[in-house]
Length: 146
Image (cartoon, rainbow, N blue to C red; front, side, top):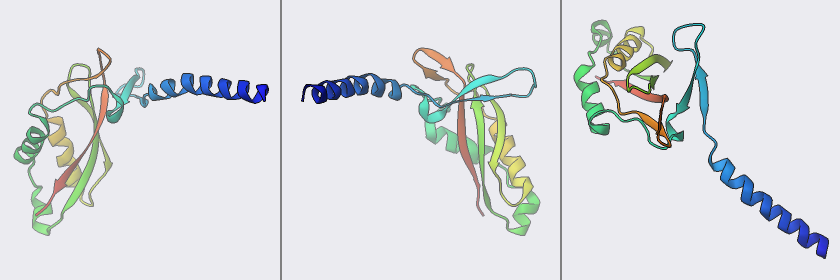
């Protein structure tokens, strides 16, 4: 009986130490943002204390995309629609970099236009872990509907 009680207390003490540590785990990836010699750690959007934000918030982001996006002419003429899922990094200075297409539309011109729109974005407010600004990966869909 005493051994079972000791084992139970040991298990509870172990959980008390392990659970808070598990809550602190961050999803961090390493990317090579254009040069083969330098790598940087990038935090995922949902795993930072303060997420990066577009100037004007979500409404400002939607307005920017709608104002900046231009439907490619031949895709418009052919009636091609689609959704381009892109990722990019908001750096510690708020600049957008490393824009990539994760899942593209059937027409390549839609993919290029989505990359152009994201590349034209102004500086974002930076993401933070604790009090430190960190680079954060953001995933954003750009829709093309007629």
